[in-house]
Length: 166
Image (tube, rainbow, N blue to C red; front, side):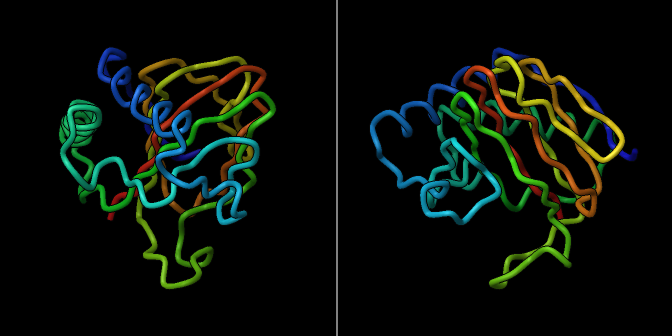
């Protein structure tokens, strides 16, 4: 297994969590999950919302913390794509990767993929072929985008932000 585990201050996760849940509860952004356009099942992934594309009081502290960790770990590249996922009970990710071979519709491939846990519920473990990872709030993982990954079903609500680096 080729991934890096680190963490960000859990406090910077709170405003990003509030942001995604507000979008979800108000219906301010359509749900890509309902459109069948993503690997997420039984959850919310807002259409057109890329958390790190604009500076907001909700997402900037988390983006700055992630950037600082990437610099500290001497991981080259920049985050060029990001998305929120809020899982409902029973929600999960189907197996997928972010490599060239998996990309369709002119979707730019990534060299590295990462995730930060914003709210850790029960279940929803991050799984690679040879390892299952239980994430807690603030946990951050970065891995080669060729690695197929998925999650186990959530037993309670869970939220993450995923990002790609190129």
